[in-house]
Length: 246
Ligand code: G3P
Ligand code: CA
Image (cartoon, rainbow, N blue to C red):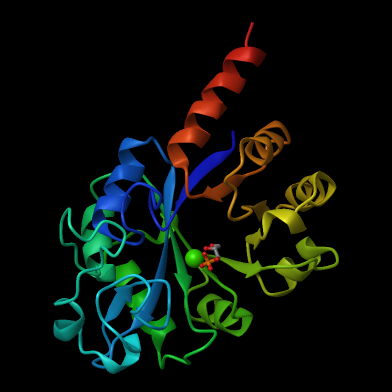
């Protein structure tokens, strides 16, 4: 049955990549959450999408130029700034919380623009410390990083993210020892999903927000999809299940 993964948490109702967004995803019934990680000036792993803090916080400049302490002074609630203040979470905070539930954790390494030194080593060390190797999937647009993760920790699943068509992506995934692929949903027609899954490769398209696209993926029994609207996706999945069960 298709799993629902909350993209940066329930990011349309709470500020993206913050604890309230992840907690809301849990309440919405999502099977997992997707988070983006980067490194601070003092080498701490923080959960934020952009290389700069400008769009999502009240600060300015690069994440890499802030210490963790400085970053934690910012309000990561640019969406509804007057309602409440939220901090940029650390990966440790997410792991502390995720061990209390059964959700899967998709960690996207955001190292395509800033080459964060030893990001892979640091992330893997924490995953092992919290013993969640079997429900974490490491993904990235940086496929060199995906291969590095596999070499460092072959027990943790990896998945390359990509935007436009790769020819026979299941063959590519196997060649880099990835267990899954995370294509843009427009680069994931049904035949490609079916062929990949037949070849043992999990398919989790992103970012699937329209009901008609969700329906297609549920009906083709795609492994999972990544969405900003987990509540809508969970409801649709239930509705479609009722239709097919006599
Ligand atoms: O995990 C896939 C998706 O999150 C990649 O796009 O830009 O939202 O991180 P982006
Ligand atoms: Ca992401």
